[in-house]
Amino acid sequence: MKKPWARVFFPAILALALASCRMDPVFYVISLAEPPRDPLVPGTPSKIVEFDGSLFVAARSRLFAAPVAGGEWKASPTAPSGGGFDVAATVGFLYALSGNGTENRLFRIGAAALGSGGGWDEVAVSAGADAIFAIGNRLFVSVPAEGGGYSIFSVADDESSSSLILSGASMLTGSAGSFLSAIGGVYRWDGSALSPVGTGIFMGIIELPSGDVVAAHHDGRLFSVSSGGIDAMTTTGGASLRIGSRATGALAVANVADTDSSDRVLVAGRQSPAGQSAFGYVEFALTASGAIDPSLNAQSGAGLRSILHPDRFSTSLGRHSVNRLFFKEGAGFFASTAATGLWLYEENRWRVVE
Image (tube, rainbow, N blue to C red; front, side, top):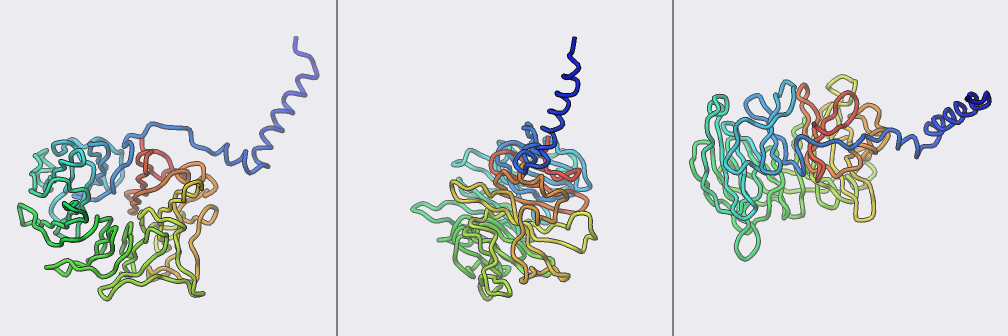
């Protein structure tokens, strides 16, 4: 028979333990940790692109899709030969790179064929293509060149094969406006030629609601980009505007959680040096016109405004390196991570897409 003192002692100990989780920050943070889950979109997913009313992402030679209006992610019923590891969307086509890294092939499909379950058409491009990005109705492809460096090929929606447009370039990492970011610099497309506007190791690029184009340098600095060149951005106090010690290249403009949609932030993925544990992303406040507010530094941790309950961030997405970000009102807020699949912000928390 249970002793009378046990009925008092054990509940008291349990209450004390639970209270300690709330009083001790370490135990409290641990209590918020998301349990491990198996991602539907596994490994290191590509960037997310929008085409013909759907979102697309590639991962481990598979293509996944979800309605732009909101809904579940599913394996795409149509995919190119060999699946896909990168995607891009021009005005008229959804493109996908497939292959094993050395014998990669480029495919595309139009809206009509996609809707009817039609097949993908192969676009001739040099084997080994490793990244694709779009500007308007034109796709750009970076291909390692013999002897080092990269060549940039291009194909327009009304062309059936690609053509070389720039030699001695570097691997592409992003596109925004009329610009492409790359491991070796930033390039501008003027409608007929691609030319460099600045050098540096740039991991990503984005066009802000203000029309300003901003690129993320590998060392964490933000640069303004124009046809006249690139310039390191600074705060009103003269300090560098920094994502952190390393930038992953993930960039997106997101609404501030639970406020009017006109209140927005620039979200930027960060990567810590070896031995440190600052991952996830940081945020930069935007002005009413959609430009970066230079009076404020990057915000992280409890200062995050794109999500509610930022205290949960460090035990969920904040534990992982974020390679790509995507936000569209009504469609969702997504993050492609370096090894733990595709994540979604839903019901006031970040979780793996299952």
